[in-house]
Length: 546
Ligand code: AMP
Image (cartoon, rainbow, N blue to C red; front, side, top):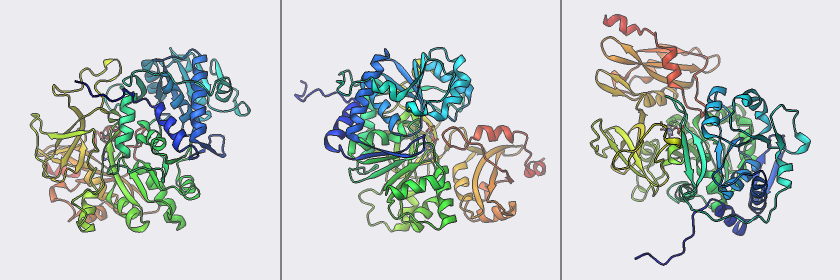
């Protein structure tokens, strides 16, 4: 027997309908690519998205068609995003930091029909347009006054296209399982693979991410998603913001410390989210200028491990609560968040801080377990570590066009490729990507833990640890350091700093200093590039062992 409740498909445009009805005057404040700060309301977003949907239909875009976007976080990107999804089309966001070859592969593989881009990216698309097989035309996300002189084929102005649309456009109704968005994974091995979100998965993910034990979003918040819309749905915030009636502040192209600080301050932002490298730039700016963060209450740090030293500075110096979060493009993306749970209220702050450093626990809709190499489940004791598997309605079941084959085991679990522990309270801690763990004498050394400790040294800007071949131990850790400008910190200083903080056999065998550590397009340390760079590196201990 079925229940007798209404069939109300979970479609993403319902989010902005709700926002317009109940939070119509709440704002989306954007640093525009043209320069000025522009302000819109959720009522305007709803009308604009309808107008855009109507204009897109005029171009011949229909349900199931894929459009590409290369755009910063800003009002027009949101308007297009909701308009296209509301029509049943799929919004495929591209990361402008990818190499041209990767962009060509991804756009052709996704078969993007029309391509929407911010002014910033005209040169990138001009450079590759001849190799794009399916793109019929390019829509430049600006007004007539700012239209560039461009060789892009069938180039059109976004505002002119929109002006021809109808803001009374009626959203069509369709199945909630319909594809809504697409994002290619960073693809550290092989070609990038397409993750295809549905309306239902996006709505459910926004609901579970906003819940009180997760991001605890509400209409009193002002949220600055520094994390881009092209990095896995800006971690739910572009859906969860309007869903809860929170105001959004969109940073556009400027993600440097002073620009982010300006928005945090002038717009009185209460919650913000980004990868650790962004926060490193902000903290440096605060240190240089002596500025403080009087309005900011919470900062979400994820995408890569948040170093404990960064957490301590936000919490102790600036009185900003850190929410350490973990996730993946394949998980929509939030998988776990580290917030204090019932039963731990009386835990002394110091003990809680030790847990807060972990990547946290999942909100409802995500199942999680750790297994050994044979697939046997491991205990939740905070010590046993193994492959982290997840399952749920916002986790990928396959990649676009079946790339990579079956990605689930027979019980529907997806292997995240991460190695982690889970403690008795259910808090998960990532020890490494499985490809990055250092295997020394049959035991595993966590590169993340060594990096976290090393960046705690006051002269270190960034640290990476990789395994380097060793005749006796298989692999031993090599610590790679970017020093603060002018610092003379030495190999011996750093090893002495680590001494006592780690087991003796975890001690890096050597330390090298570099000007820069390579990053992936989403701001993670690019271990593959470092391993190539140091492929022939001979550790002093290797000589001694032979
Ligand atoms: P992506 O799909 O590009 O966002 O990459 C997902 C991967 O980033 C995860 O599988 C982790 O390896 C890594 N990652 C994300 N968040 C964290 C975190 N808080 N700590 C450590 N690694 C993380």
